[in-house]
Each structure stands twice: as C-alpha cells, then as structure tokens.
Length: 285
Ligand SMILES: Nc1ncnc2c1ncn2[C@@H]1O[C@H](COP(=O)(O)OP(=O)(O)O)[C@@H](O)[C@H]1O
Ligand SMILES: [Mg+2]
Image: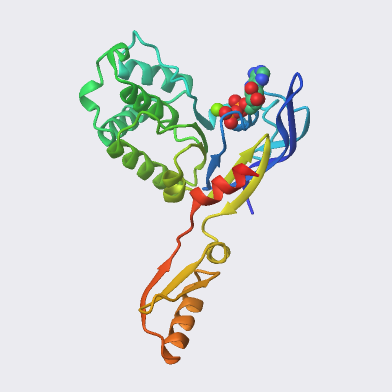
C-alpha cells in the first residue's frame, strides 16, 4: 500500500493540553479522508502537523515518505485551505490567483488555463476582474478553493471547505475533488461537520476525539458495514423481524425462508450505513 500520509502514535501538547494524544492515521494515494470530530478534537492540529507547522512531541509523521518538519519541498506539492481564506482583499480575483500561481512557479499559459477552467466550473467567470473586497463569503471560499487546487497538488488539505457554499457549488466542488482523486491520484484530507458530504465523497473516515482516532473505516469496504447495521422485515400481521446485517444475500435468504414458512411480508427496510448514528454514539462514549 502506497501511503501519502502516515502518522504513528503522534503526540502534540500545548502546555498541559494534549491536542494529539497518540494519533494514528494513514491516507493512501488517491484517498479522500473525511476527518470528523467535535470542536477542539484536534483536526486542525492534525493538518498543521502534516504541513510541518507543528513539531510533534513524540511519534512519527511521514508525508510522501518524508518528514514534513525538514522537507519544505513538500509544500509545493500540497494545497491547503484554512478556515481563514487568506486572500488579498484589495486585489481582484484573478490577481489573487496569479499571485499564488507565481508562488507555485506556474507558467502563465498553465495557470491561465487552470484558472479559467475553475472559474467556469464555479460559475464566477464574470467576477474575474473584480476586487475580492466586495465578495460574499461563498465567493471568497470559491476563490480560496481555486487557489488551493490550481497547481495540481498531490496532496490537498481542506479545513471545512464547504462552509458558506451553496448546494450547486458544493456539488461542483465534490465533482472536482472526485475527478482529481480518480484521474490524478490526488489525496485529500477534508475536515467537515457535514456527514452527508463524507458519505458522498470520502473513501475513508476517521472520527477524532481528544486527539485520538476513535474510529477508522474504509467506506469502500462495505462488507464490514453490512454487519454494523440492520434490516427490519415487517409482516402484514404487524410482526417485525430484525436482522443484524444489511448483507443483500443474507436478507434475500431470510425473506425467502419467511415466505416459504407462510409469512406475508409487506416491507423490508434496510438501515443504510448510518454515519450520524455512529458518530453520535462514539462521541458520547
Ligand atoms: N496553537 C495552539 N496553542 C494552544 N492550544 C492549542 C493550539 N492549537 C490547538 N490548541 C488546542 O488543541 C486542541 C485541539 O484543537 P484543534 O486542533 O484546533 O481542534 P479542531 O480543529 O478539531 O476544532 C484544543 O484544545 C485547542 O485549544
Ligand atoms: Mg479546526
């Protein structure tokens, strides 16, 4: 397995607060990891540690196989979107993007094409030459997302990227993330409070609590997920049978046996992977 990020037993203390307390986390090439957790769980600290901005007190951090504290070349291969958009208010949208394109040493023909592509995707081509100062929160967020993605980074860290975006833009953004993951093998870490977003685009989830990874699951590995949730089979006479699985073959077999046994089945409900239920139950512990 080729990991873009490996964090092993990472501890990061601020005075007497353990922001990370033995954290383990991996992201594979092309993986889209959704980081979930309450405020103060340690999500932003994870991102800052991956960027080499925080030095762990102990444990091991590898990004592209290297130590981010010492290897600043990693920064050129990474795109970062923080909570604060980091744009220059007095510059136009285009000037902002060109400024960052130059930081990333992109050639004009490359960045112009990329910028136009993203402006078109986010339907803000008409805002290209307007100063960012007058932009709505959503428009600033789109500009910051373009800044984060335009140099085609191998790794993208996004701290709550879809706050302030409208549903159409969120959908566009999800499409772009999935396309980059699939076609370019770009790896993503996305912190979010939006569980639907995680279900829709993430390949993996990690639930963080008090600096530890409480739960880690590959969402493609559906077989395990089948056994985490239930199927409720309901009969005409009101009797209900609950199966502790959502595995389609097991459910089909149960229905066949019930019908052969004379039951009149009127409904079989499958509780889909219920991330919200899982998150709430883990967060309570
Ligand atoms: N620079 C810092 N100085 C002191 N404490 C910090 C610093 N950064 C984070 N913390 C503390 O570490 C914990 C985790 O914070 P953070 O990573 O920002 O959480 P999240 O992003 O999940 O909301 C919190 O208790 C926070 O107060
Ligand atoms: Mg945070």
